[in-house]
Image (cartoon, chains in turn purple, blue):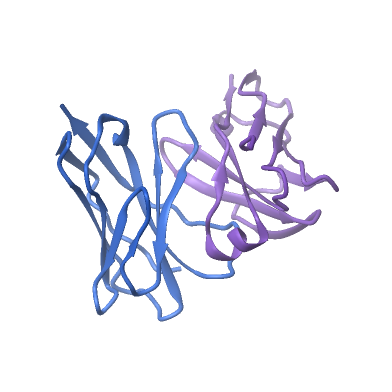
Amino acid sequence: KAGVTQTPRYLIKTRGQQVTLSCSPISGHRSVSWYQQTPGQGLQFLFEYFSETQRNKGNFPGRFSGRQFSNSRSEMNVSTLELGDSALYLCASSSSRGANTGELFFGEGSRLTVL
Amino acid sequence: DAKTTQPPSMDCAEGRAANLPCNHSTISGNEYVYWYRQIHSQGPQYIIHGLKNNETNEMASLIITEDRKSSTLILPHATLRDTAVYYCIVRVNNAGNMLTFGGGTRLMVKP
């Protein structure tokens, strides 16, 4: 069974640009969430989607947005990039049971560098 | 969600048991204890979770004190591949995919 797939794995952008990251969950998983990991702030929850609806949102500015498609694949977008957005962006998926029990499966992440 | 306190780092000899403590003195009755780990350059990996009874799976054992104010994750025979940051998380069940990660414990398994 394939794991959570995130693309691209690495990317470099400049300030002011926007970026879109993609996440394909484990087959059959309908819950997808996104996390940001930085050396200073650690792992922080961005948002969660279930059946194309945003279910929870973390404390991030509106420049951070996401969506989920009918096949459960998800994308997140960051507009007007700032230097502080440089981070590892992690996607996690779970089954309906896993979403209740906290058993999440994480991808390897997309490492974004903003210059 | 209740806050957790973990030592920032620990060492363990290869082949010995690694005992990672976590303090969660403000845990509520409906909050579970979860453990995840993150090996360098990878996404976090779920290990185990429990409410009040001790739990064991193929990866580890979770010991929760009777008052539930602290817990210990036990890796019975640590290997070099267990070198990682271990996160103790407390949250209610049915909370979807939202986890609040703290600083974790950086476990170094040494030969």
